[in-house]
Amino acid sequence: MTMLNPNIPEAVRAVASDGTKLRYAMMELAKQFPDVIALGRGDPDLDTPAHIVEAAKQAMRDQRTGLTPVAGLPELRDAIAHNLRTRNGLPVERDNIIVTTGGQEGIFLIMQALLDPGDEVLVPDPRYTSYDDSILRAGGKMVMVPTYPEDAFDLRAEAVEAAITPRTKALLIVTPSNPTGGILTEASAKAIADVAIRHNIIVISDEIYGRFVFDGWKHVSIGSLPGMAERTITLDGFSKTYAMTGWRVGFVAAPANLIDAMTTIKTLTTGPVASVSQWASVAAATGPDEVVQDFYRIYDERRAIMKNGLGEMGFDIGDARGGFFIWPNSSSTGIHATELSYLVLQEARVLVFPGAGFGQGWDSFLRVTVLAPTDQLREAVERMRPVIAKYRG
Ligand SMILES: Cc1ncc(COP(=O)(O)O)c(C=O)c1O
Image (tube, rainbow, N blue to C red):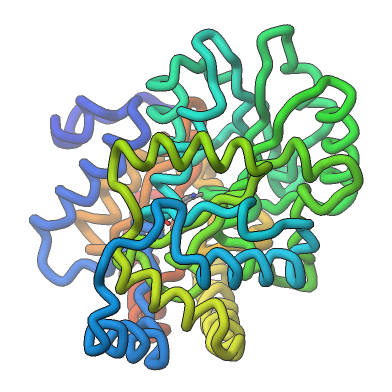
């Protein structure tokens, strides 16, 4: 791939090799341009369903606003456990659940509770780089496990096994993946479970996009496989499933001793999640599932628009099977993806993230979300088309 063009702004160049900072720099830059269509950040643009909002209002009217137990409202932990049992096949009860301040806090608590200094965590490459700091601050070390476009970024059990050392404590799985949209297939899940059991490794399974798996593929929770419940930590939340990012409610399911350790740490930091948000989440978890199915259909329609549009521009769009992202290979343009993202922002006023925002060596990929209404997605395609054609030369 070509070098990063010296004409792109210093604010972006300075952080070009730091995934999280690069994404934030792109978002800052986007503020300078009027009328930007933001297909960068992974926050749902849809409204939180009305019955969930109403449940929060009712909790306020009833003054159900005091502190809850640190691990979460019993009603919410029970509802989450019930859904994980019935939908994901995880054998969990209330004491296997902690409610966290978004999935993000869940990630931090998991690493703090699990890792000792020098422990290695296997991380699929490319990755959601927000994991990095939580692993590193807990004294852990990241060891990359490659994933490949030709497998639609499924995780290969052989690649996992090849990365294991005597210091390996845990394997991280993100399914569907941020940024690739790859999913862990059932065959891979079984093969990886076998590796984890043989090598006595803990699996951290981030399933925050798990309700959005498309094209006939099936979401698999690795913790539901034989022998895996006692070694799996499952992370999920309300942000993506119910369009509730700002309510800050996530959860972790794990063996009870780990939940206790995480609860102790949470006591020292944020304490319990805001009670009103938790009551809203009870309504989400126990309410009609049609709201999620409606979201699913909306995202699926949007994916088709974006995939067609990017394909027509000449990108190899790959095979994103789940989540909110498309991860096109932009190497046919011959332009470094960080520069290409900048040009697309400047000239098409569309914000997409460069592949370098998700790890080294991904300079020829873009991450494009489907988190805008269909008319805006069509508009984004129309704006990008001439810009890409111009630079394709
Ligand atoms: C893979 C993954 N895990 C966890 C999170 C955390 O989400 P939240 O803190 O909004 O629940 C995100 C957010 O983008 C994510 O992409």
